Image (tube, rainbow, N blue to C red; front, top):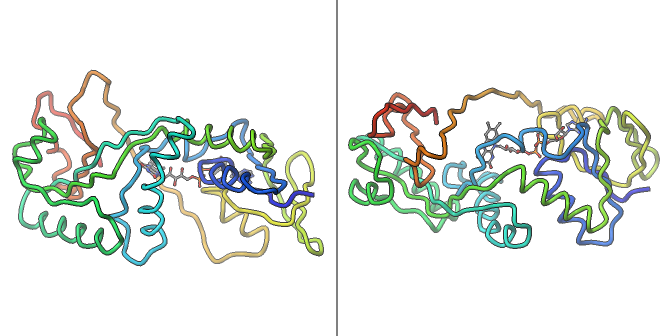
Length: 261
Ligand SMILES: Cc1cc2nc3c(=O)[nH]c(=O)nc-3n(C[C@H](O)[C@H](O)[C@H](O)COP(=O)(O)OP(=O)(O)OC[C@H]3O[C@@H](n4cnc5c(N)ncnc54)[C@H](O)[C@@H]3O)c2cc1C
């Protein structure tokens, strides 16, 4: 009998497994694929957000600020690759400036202490190739980048070293309650556990349904990326344009580079 079964070995499941492996608990991490980090955690932008864009009062905002502050130490411990780059939310006119001020004030309320609104000269010091029409920006100094899959793998390896049992190719197909514990059915076996943690990402509503919880549904969406070559060293920071009609105007330099942000 396990104390805890965690369903899903993405960054969330692996981080939970690593944290709980510090305690005297018997833990099993179940993953339906043949490796960890095969879901959203393998292919995201790797941005360690600052929190200013999350709605004030939400758990997301609170955890974003708290989580951001943990990255330096976490990377020292696990060496997955993290860099504090900073980020600019750029604006072109007075309307954009109003939106940027709104983000700044929202960020202050959430607890961000790294924010500054900067003008054209300072923007060009930070991003020399930015479009000359960019007049104003929110500079979020705590934003960084990390390698999301290396981070997930490092968390999993550390959890395993601390005694967590990782079972791959083990899709959870059903859960039943038996007295004071659960029986978790996978493709291969039945596993007993006192607690279950649902970290199944896009499939977490299906896992919740297995124990009679129907109060949320996941609706996945698709996006697009343009990848820059390493020789196209135009950007120093992460640059966001929240003003969609101007999304193709981030850079000054030819050849014209389009970014969808
Ligand atoms: C295009 C894109 C860009 C993003 N950019 C960023 C960013 O820059 N910064 C940021 O912080 N976030 C970003 N995100 C969000 C981030 O990727 C996710 O929030 C994060 O990866 C979610 O991790 P997870 O562990 O919850 O999910 P996942 O990584 O999807 O892990 C869930 C795991 O559960 C497993 N699973 C599912 N069902 C079962 C089952 N029945 N039995 C066993 N295992 C199961 C899956 O196989 C999967 O491995 C981005 C997301 C996308 C899509």
